[in-house]
Image (cartoon, rainbow, N blue to C red; front, side, top):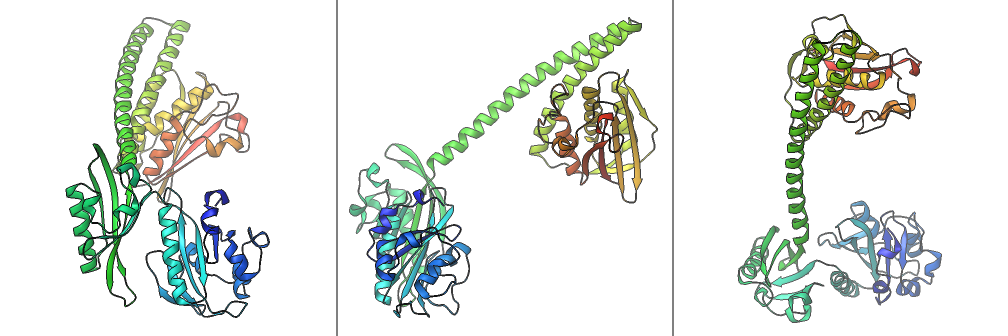
Length: 475
């Protein structure tokens, strides 16, 4: 936690001794009261960790209540006798006196940033239980008044006994005006009724109520996340209800805007993908008709054009497939690897693909063809039209290893771990990027419960071609 995140002036204005620890347990504030109380100046202890504050107070390095807040640990040990535990706040009498011999009561509370993340803890001390209780109330008031949330307590009669909210003035009232009145003095009729009834129920039953409320307020749609807890008195009985209302209007608006933007983006991408796909399919068909009328070098060039167009079609399919995989969990079924491989080899006429074949069933789904297609397409992209591709399938126990090796430029060792990441580049000598193809391969393989990695076609010689290996579960 950065010291600038803590309102230093607030803690220095406290009369009682107070210290603040950051999330790592280091002292970030040692106020004037603490200096007077211990005789230790702030410059000697601020920035210190490893329970240096405990040694300054009690003569030994061990956790204090503030540390218990940070670690969510139990403070009821041989060091303290718990007096109260309200929410996340701790109030306890120290069983060990201070170095000065004084008997003290300590109070600690968590510190959160505006997102609700725990960033530190504050601890105060007093010579007597009464002073500690008074310090606790003062500390709560100071902290509550500096937070953006609406914080309040309501008694059995439905009257605000405490009210803190920095946004109150935007609603035409001040926190001081609200205290002593019912929620009807602040909120619309229906919401005031909800809050008063919820407080009565909490006091009567001890249950915790948490709801998201949306309503029109001063001509504007507002949304609050409201949580109400029972508040116990000195005798242990429930005397009041304590609540927190967090304004989530902007959060919900942002979420709604993101959803609408995402829907529009998906629509535009679908329309664009469909148009490009249809145009590419027409072009591929025309090129195939032309290739059948040609021979020799012209026929080979036509085949290269067709293969290039089909790779573009494969990119569109990959984008659509990745969107589907991110939204839905696939269902596994027995799939014939040999059939899937042969059906994809037929799509790449003119490419030197060597495969001996062999029947083998694995747990996958029809999308397994995309793994094979993307591996072949990847070899062509980085090896050119003259690349030689070798596909093999090997069974070992309960697993099947599919290998697609090529005589292309290979993959340097330092790039192998990252080529399955989205749009990861294959190196300076490769044109373009590895794109979505290998990312699709990894995503599908993971959903099949398998594993994929990159290696060399010739072990130890990255420059003589790459080999992508996929492990699948045998049926």
